[in-house]
Length: 370
Image 1 (cartoon, rainbow, N blue to C red):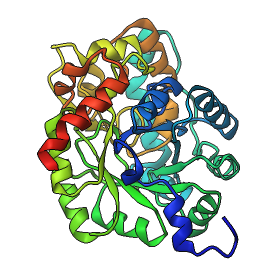
Image 2: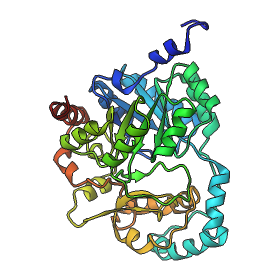
Image 3: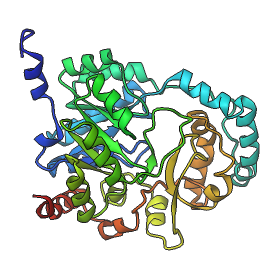
Image 4: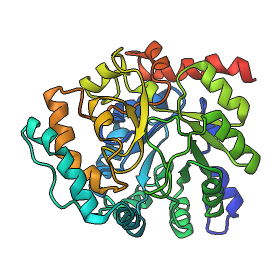
């Protein structure tokens, strides 16, 4: 590619969902579930796996990239959390500031005492090495770089695209989708309220809507008829795939349905909870991280959901020792058990290899939409 080559020709070289044999994205589930092995398996099946670098620094992100490259020649990507100090501090101030955070911490101390640990003290804002990670990704030139929790500036998009990376923005609404396209995003991940784990709203203090994946896909397609995007949230069966493709999505993004695959790094406790009949609902809650994320409703969610302030990443840091200790102790009533709205439908794919899950969900859906 020469410097004089037209921008349109350059953009055609960047990876789009329609270029994939199966336009199925493996969600970047940060914190352990998305492993290099899972990314490789999704890629080998014709989809695209994404490293969840949200809680990694630049060096650890590079190490993950190297590991994936050792395992597969298939394309893959890296997801980055896009955090802004001003937004985080504004949300914290609106939730009562440090006093509000301390009040919430006081309510958690009985849980911490029972687990024999202390909550993290005086948690501060961090962007998890955001700028250095972006610099590293420009150098690594991975096929895809995606962003969650915010929309990168046009200059960041252009730097990554100049390195050959397609830039993806995860959006939760039509206006954010428009903004992402305006800064030059190559394609979008359109994530509804049905998604498990964190919702990619662009403000910490934003209250979540309850729009379904199909409804959101239709709205984004109507607003942006030419833009490629994948649909995320509650997709667990071939029928779910068919529905979002018929509504206008180019492809799909899978999360919960991959959590029990052998390649996933999901903890034994989390795997067991996903199949446990004692859990009967999921709920978006701030109680673990200060930012809304959908989880199975266990005792901790039921007790602390209403009191949790909008304080991200402060609550994430505050509760970190508690979450880790509870998981190690096998206490299913305390740690976050992330799950999408249709986690029960994912039972049909429990313990099956990721490549089989990707292939079956896509191939069985296609006759309904072709």
